[in-house]
Length: 119
Image (tube, rainbow, N blue to C red; front, side, top):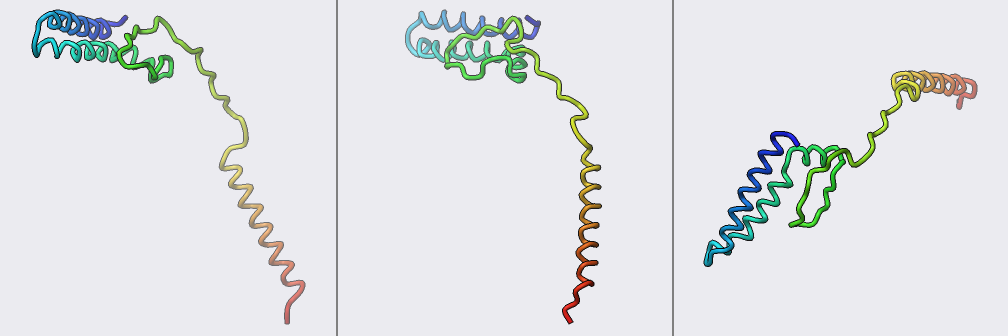
């Protein structure tokens, strides 16, 4: 757990303690206890390590609201394979061959057009 994760966890713990303390009191404060507890869960889900894991696709992104999340201890997926290099001809080579073929075909059609004039 990084220092940023610890600080986020400390803030969430303080908010949870406040929600627990306020829920015992009556009136308007008791009504605010539930949203404070939800905010504590939200803050726990905003840990930098969890955000980084979600960006890499290593953490679940479809959890139910209110579910407590604990940061994964390690990668959940295996590492992704590296793309192969040199898998085919270069794009400029393909464009050059296509251009040369087009010119040859156009010259051939033009040359054959002179063989049979429509006069």
